Length: 246
Image (cartoon, rainbow, N blue to C red; front, side):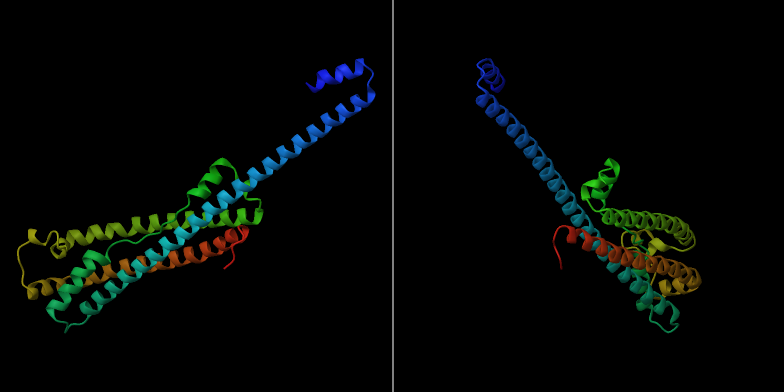
């Protein structure tokens, strides 16, 4: 439309109209470019806020998960400590020792590990889209945190692989399942005194096993505490980028 009108004005030598049409074309192109740039910038800001919000959610959930795992590990450590106190006390009553043993074998031997919520980082990493965050320092902190998570996950696998054979050894040398509520009925009935005597005969084996699990749980507590501290630091940076300060 503009081109046809411009051609007509040139043929008619209407130079004022030609100049006016030219200005209209130039201004139109300029405005179009500005709108395009604004849309691109706006889209970039929306993408940045989207990923920052997702990162904040992941980090908050990781902190909550780590706090829960830390609490569970501490509770199970306390169970082990109560068991060893009863086991080491030669004057502890049979019912007390048996109850502590049942609690230890059913709850204290559960491995508490290390968990994270890290899907947003993996999304950014797999797509190479870190530039959307527009903050190289934040990217570096996220990479460092991810490296820490990988190290802790590998350490958990190594430690659990190391300790599990001792569980197998205990099961082969001691009637562990006699003290599990779900399987106790499969064994001949023993009095509390007989159960207490069996436990004391195997005291060295049980004490060694308890020490291993206590060590593992202590490691889990420290690992999750480190995860909480490091995640909170990075979460603070993410929230700062979002303009949220606490």
